[in-house]
Image (cartoon, rainbow, N blue to C red):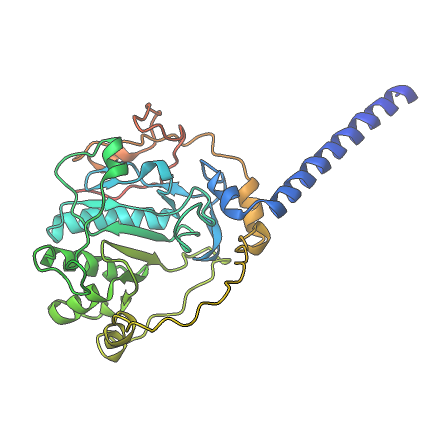
Length: 351
């Protein structure tokens, strides 16, 4: 090889390496200056990697996320423009199986599925401190109607609280036994670690549930959660970088721990005589969670390529059989969503 030719090739190689270094440095600078919620919230599709959970429910991300279909035989996904119907394949399978079991065994007509996670998890642009690792799902406590919502209705329709107005107890005109069966069905799945509901709902179950009470300890009281239940899965097998949450107590949770919510946490506060006005301090700007605050693997997840295959229909008619969920050639969705939407296989049977 001539000396001039060798020098030109070396120069090109050097330029290429320097360009890669420049791009990597640019990514590093961006990740140091842009909040993690904007980095992850800007991703429209998952990382084309094997399914892996990294970190804790409120501080992590997910690789290889899958989406729940917009419509299934017994469910509808809501708030589609948020693009939060993603999760670990085990979460998607659990939600779909719950929809089928509750409809066929518990008298619940179908699930309205709220927020799961973003395509790659991570902190969300708005709301939710958790839902970051693809193991959390919000299921509305409003029964699915016997029709399909339009795209506009999925954005504008609100979940209905099961509590009495301005109260902390369940409204008997809204609550049904099917509500209880739905929640306890979800709690019965071994992969479900806990379910968060309003303390009023927990008390209703403690007072009225006559079935198997061995999973009642999974139903945990928490603020809010009177219009939806929050299902949380255990760390899935194979995700060694997933940080587990503490186990729930072994007892039913219907004793003093539940009383505290009504005697202390939810009790109206007494009016306090205002003190003399003082000059308020200038509030400090809240510190954003940055990429460096998350597990190191999340930087890799964030920069991974998008999937280019495994196309799937995103809108499925009610009443179809499980075979209709197999990956097929993409049709145009009426909901203006990402073109490629990977869904997990196999799909649960509806028979």
